[in-house]
Length: 324
Image (cartoon, rainbow, N blue to C red; front, side):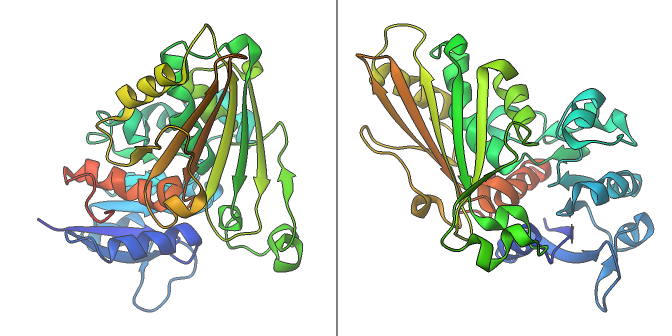
């Protein structure tokens, strides 16, 4: 069986990565959609055009503001939607308005959308009309933090600190002074301090209180990749083996999670242009200090790769199809 899927926003970094991945997918025919000015050979992002084209699913690799208008129209056409923007990631109107500003025109869709982190919500994705693809930073953070929380390994009163660094493609391809070559090259900068939009996704998924979680985002002078160094203190006397065992139990059957060998932590070369999340664990038993290092490709597992993983689940295809 083959499926026709549309890509709106195919000129952006995530949309172009989607097209690259889907071009090698054996059961998918990608169709280019234009959400602004239609180009020759492309299809407008409208319910009528999508219906006439026989599409079964649409990827929205567009800004949040555009997705807010497009999602209801695509759903009205009877197609599944995977939204790569932040428009439908948070579950309440209050949370969305606090972190994204403005009002949400369809708050009922916040409650309906499945959060598309397969390692946590695989059972919800196949039946969902709307799948909210997670942010890149929270994907790496949640996969690294949640086993600590679930197994009671971290002292939350001591806080969890996530020091996150991303390549410039995470800022999109719209030119701004902050992502121009002259500003980025030979530079290193922090941004959105204490107000990054991705923070609430970590609070929501890992079940950690805002007061117990500190997050900083920093821009690396490279094209792509995210590396997060996460610091915690143990809730009791532990060994590194016990902590590693918690991650092994959590992810032993996950095709895109790789736990590094003892004494080893990942770097960006390990995950470049893949859909993997690599995790390394280090722990000092004497002081109770622990460090988790989590690495992904922000355009892979952080965006397009994870979107294709969600699409495979939505269509009942092998989860790794087109990604390995």
